[in-house]
Length: 413
Ligand SMILES: [Zn+2]
Image 1: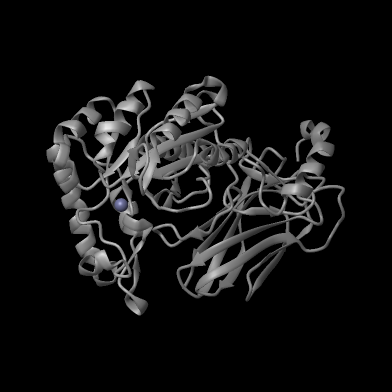
Image 2: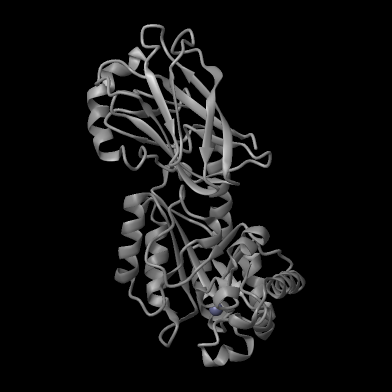
């Protein structure tokens, strides 16, 4: 707890009441202070894309993402090659467009009859053919029919890890919420339908994304005046005009570009941003419960980016971590903390659902000096655990328990 923060304490108290259970509010920085990102995408390499949609987008200098099936690209190779020249992104949508056998047209290529190795081979084949036809290597994928599995029942498997391995991003279909750039799994970015919609209908999604600083990924098929599975040219024109107006505060770019930006920005922010998330063991088996991946819960507790630690740790505050333990057993707990000599000595508890460590916060020298020490052994169940660090007794809202940077759990089986 730093004295310079005292001025803000009244303000923070108000904020904490609202956000303490959800973590602090963190704003994702879009380029040039833009409010949101927008990507337009079109699936299947439909005939009306090179003839109608792409020339319209080119008029406004807007680059979109086209999830192409190589066989369909061959129907108008010149048109698709031109689209590459004007900067549109060519992306992977598989070779044969397999979907559930519930679609009668997909019964002979049903996802229920696929395996992960067959899918991997076909996705690499699609990349290879797109490279040969268009001279670019896809970095993003759209799940045909938005379906993210192969197999059925007890043999069903998720396609998501495969897509995460092969691509920067994977897009779904018929979603309802835009992508949260800090939170989203890039292998499962949401795609919202823009086919057969007026500009006003699409604008409602844009407003929602702008209000929340999100990334809206719109998905369509044909680009024409009318027809089934068609993004109307009129809608597209109004959308292009709106997105190009600087006052709209929209960064419009292909999915691969936005995904790469999101990935790099998250990486740069990771060390100093509190984003509570499930903790998994590092390759050496250690579980790092950091201030960045824990949830500060309580009336005053605050993540302090400058110190990469939780501060303002009063009698009613605690930090909660969710973790996936590699196995049941005993873990050595190492605490990294700081505390002023005046505040040192209060009792703490580190507890899992099956065990607890109790101790006293030892002196570290000052609030600015962090110290690392073993505090004992903690048993965990294998798999999901919730671990809490809290004061042993509620000492009220005056004073603080400690500033908490990290607890490392080292398996000692
Ligand atoms: Zn498709």
